[in-house]
Image (tube, rainbow, N blue to C red; front, side, top):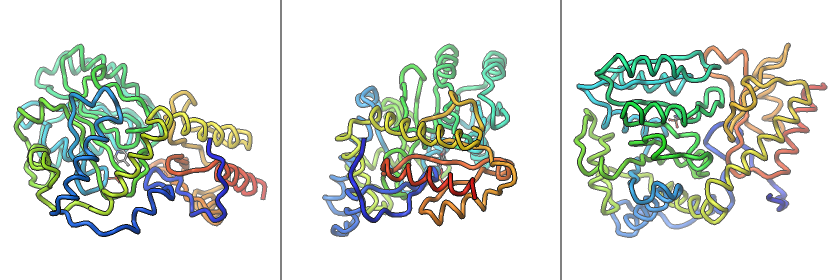
Length: 368
Ligand SMILES: *Cc1c(COP(=O)(O)O)cnc(C)c1O
């Protein structure tokens, strides 16, 4: 548990990325500028790729990391550009904004897909997914979101992985809001490729995203991409030397390396998940005591985000503005959920004292 006293705290970001940076990572911005064509940058990229591979020991020998300059969506789209087939069909199983976004990507790319869509508060519909896997023989790949940030539901990837293995379908996975903060079982879930980003559970700054994909796939597969920038195979090949065909967010890479070092030194994803759980529990217990209600059954939540029902008679803006005045940024519900929920993420460099201040600010707001 962190106990250091910090006199002046920055605004604490309780939105699901970007996150509040640690001092250690933030200070890296004060170092020298880096050119993406110089050997020291290539060395940095090779180190980042190696560190990304070993966040999960299981991935280290069989997966390779490829980095892109862009937000999380960029890495997700690189996967679907490069790996989703034009001849076969991708089965997308969605229960939120991000799952449905994968279907939108395939639609704009003109690639065949089948969408099994659940209402956002619901779990994935495995019954319908299995029915399609049995009957639609053109399905070649399965796509899903690990932690559906729309609600904070940690999807049941053990169940989905079992289906992928049973029907022999590679899984293309969005772990944008779970990588480094939840368990990922690469073999059990039949993961061919996953996408994530520097500025969520890794605690880096926004601007760099990455794909971890099976090395044999990257070596032997051929691209389905109709985009030059998002071609995973091209990027993988060129990045073997640490160089990239296009300018990378060099400064953000420096911060990412530091964030990965910090993650490793603090005990890796397991320690990070325990810390997230500790903070999330404190917030959930306190808010429930104040009479707020969770949007999902408590056991469905991930470690890094909670969705609460908006209390009667309060708008999102009222809660947002009062907490912002107290030094916290929270997050609204998306689309149809805007008027029914608010979200509190708990990634980033958050101290126990920050959490206590948040709880006090919420208590003050609800009793005024
Ligand atoms: C944050 C997030 C993304 C990517 O969003 P960007 O705004 O492009 O960074 C994708 N999927 C999930 C599940 C996310 O939480």
